[in-house]
Amino acid sequence: MSQSDIIASIAAGLAALSFIVSLWAAYKASKFSDYQVRLSNRAELHKILLDIDRELLHDPSLHAMFKSATGSVPASISPLDIAKQDTYAAMYLNMFELSFAQFKEIRGLSATEQEVSEAWDAFILSFFEDCIRARPTWARFRSTYYSSFRDYIDGLIAKLDAKERT
Image 1 (tube, one colour):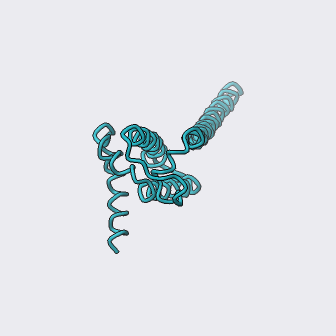
Image 2 (cartoon, rainbow, N blue to C red):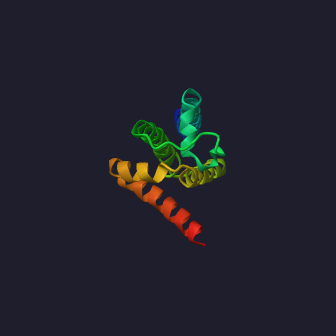
Image 3 (cartoon, rainbow, N blue to C red):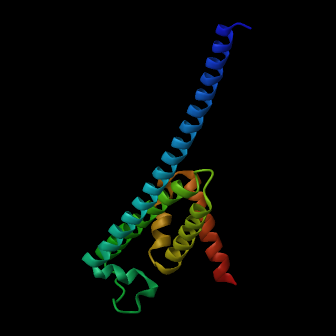
């Protein structure tokens, strides 16, 4: 083997090593980017929740739609109040759709993301349990959501119904 063959072999080995290191770096960068996007999406969900909660500050009459409101706001049967409550409940449904996309459609959730996903499930269940306008609003707008999300919400409602029967 000549000196030029040795140099060529070393160069080829270094090129292969460089290629492997590049692939590893690209993989790590992709994973980090994926994590950052997921974290950003979680932050966006919480921002949306804060925006929805802010609506309660602007219109305290919306509290009447929650069983846990402890009677501080009398229930309303006016068509305007019912329409506002249904719109408010629809805001929650839209947020739940985003949480579904974030935690149920994405594969390979970390343990932390799985924990957050379970917390969203519990929150959605408590919303349907506490909000008197949640089920009528869901029934009204259900067909406007995509089928996997409809199945998910219907499954959670069925779980809630089973819990209430026992």
